[in-house]
Length: 148
Image (cartoon, rainbow, N blue to C red; front, side):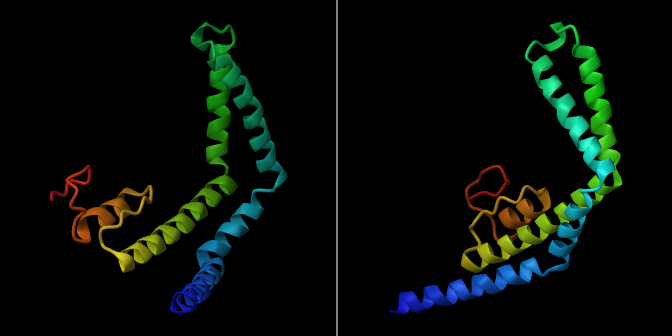
């Protein structure tokens, strides 16, 4: 019975945590920026890039020996640069990174509450270093540089 009550309490707390994340400034900003990507100009750039990407994948199979290799590669780079410079896409990527950082911080806090030896793959070198070494060391002598 105790395990069941404890499980229910954990489920309630996880529901609260997810509600807090969903109502966070980072999540709201992410959703606004995602919606802003629906503007016709940005969508035209995305569709043009998707089309050239298909051509690039076809050309890439043969590499520089394909007759259209240079032209398709040049167009792909140009359209990718256009996408990267689009204000809506840049704003979305920043919002996405902010939300990911929030989720990484929460993951590290949850893992740390269980054990300081839990490694959390965040994809962010700052968090990886923090989680692996500054919390007491991983003790594995692995890639983080800690030693047993």
